[in-house]
Image (cartoon, rainbow, N blue to C red; front, side, top):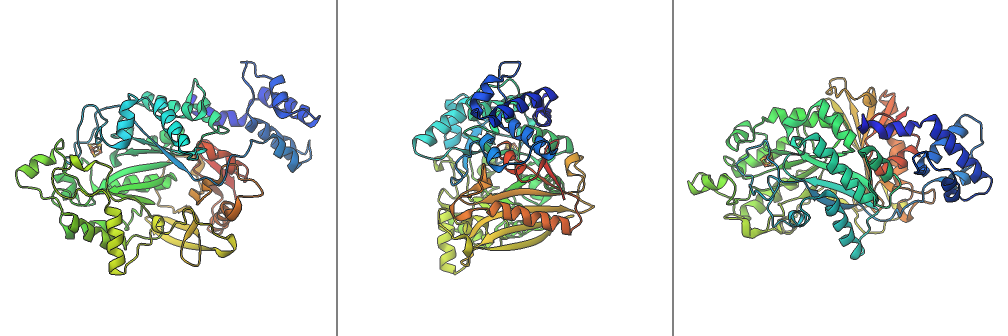
Length: 529
Ligand code: SF4
């Protein structure tokens, strides 16, 4: 299948390896890498990628035919891209399309994919580009560059209804065109687009889609990996079946638990959306519901989306009939100030309210600056939030000698999670790694790479996220932090009897792991322990 071609290329055909070897010989004889590549084109007129030269060199040195020289490897390997910039998120929207969900709080606008309004900032941009993925990405990167924003590491955030309900050929086309835009090149297959991105100027360091719990299945997990997806956003909304029914979510809390366990077993980063103030909820039931998130679900990131009363959502009718009452701003601030202090250190609160312009909100809270209001309230109460976002260093310069490794171990169903981080004496977070150790009762994903494997689900070093192209010199204050986290993960996995360590790698970070002893599997990179 065409989707699998990227790892088949990694295995290299004998013809390509022979060609790569010829190029290497010429480089060893003193030719420049680019000249040698041009003199030895592929039969179809293209050129070998530098990653192939690196793979061929590894093969030659591993077999003992050539002796290993770090300098030679440095000459042929890809030019490292800047390591000090952070990750830039580029948001794209899929085309208007029906969603299988019938949630009563969700707005409908025929011009938009389900749940989006045309005047939300990201949605407006998508509409301007007629939802073309290529145009959306190019326009966003151009705009970011024009304001001096780094664009070498791009997290692609694909929004719109339920991703998994779109036709697979559309999904594949959409992702390929996003990658083409990052690559500045056209590709004929998704596999080509992925391979090209491994050495592109704008590398993809994360691919995020949003879906529903009832659309997560072993087949879907494999498909998402083939597309290159690394992070999933799932609408949980509530963990109370009665409230799920009242709001016509169309799935149970148990289905959410099952989906999240499966995503975890497949190594995805998990972002859960939770909604206070749904029809049937009270301030007290919301407090209880929120506490259930940390019992068996334990998301890596959450978005708290208070229900917003919109005229083009069915809930509006309930409100007109007097069956629904939105919370006031004060009630919301009080509720979220309370629950925010209960969020564990391994979780990041990404958002506290949706980006819906307040003119669309019929009644209830209209303030979009809830996060600031809540932080002000916490300060007054003398409470603190320990979530990742509240502790990350951001732009601050930190001396690596001032940070210490910390390890938080927690059990999620059948999986033991290790949140390994670097923290400063002031409790600021400079980097972390998420390691999953699945127990025997963890869901069977059917993914061959994950058999008897511990899984690295995320490596994040602030100021240098995922260290694409990290050099031996490292980058200023965080030199080698990613490597240390990975070494610790290997040690922990080995101590727990795992034979393999797998990592869910974005396309643009594959090289980083390959340089650290991981090998290309079917859909993950894997290291034998
Ligand atoms: S599943 Fe999501 S997009 Fe679909 S109707 Fe429900 S909330 Fe809206």
